[in-house]
Length: 335
Image (cartoon, rainbow, N blue to C red):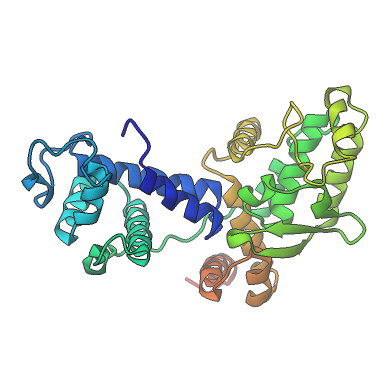
């Protein structure tokens, strides 16, 4: 879609500022809706024909209509379950995973529920659409030895190397999402109490403890950061800006999630570790290692910021699998 559509933009703003979706999630929803809009307009890549209901429109129905609504707005209003199913059939040609397709369906559910609430549509076509069943994948976790190898990879004699070690230590020590990590401000760190104030999904805040290695790594990073002339502007900013980022990029600005991923990839390569390990793998490893060592499920749920206990319970399956493997390898009559 060449130009932005006001209805779609208003929905994205609703997700960001009323539902408090993260910028990343809102962007994903926006991308899904733009793909849907292209399909409705008949100019989606690989599209063979117009949706059945929409194809009946008159040829001259282009651009702005008499009542001020764009052609796309009218098609969004007029789409029924058959049109949505046509879109889902169209998606099949891209080879999306069931999880990605499910997210696109969830996007449309939220969108049409919002349109219905606003009175823009009279019926919700998504009520007749089922979400495809997904196979539950166990979260990936790495061994403690691998974590230690990764955490020791950055050269902490340099400010940026010390920053990278502090980032990796924090991810593993707290289990925070990478999106939560990059949003941390200097005043979210309680060095005396050795905790971090985390702003999670839906702007829900939680306090998480920092392990001794993580707090030491952060302190070392800040000690190198203060006198580093490359970041001289930060000393002036810290006097007036309570939102000074905790982890800064080479220009003194806030790090992005993509930057954190790039840093991690660099150290994985240097260590010879699996390149598919992600910041989220450290979150999974955090939870799995806690449960392996006797932590209760409710505590892990609170530390991870999960709203539902069932989301956390998947880690118990992984922990049980590790116990089974250890039993099979150690017990003389296990096999």
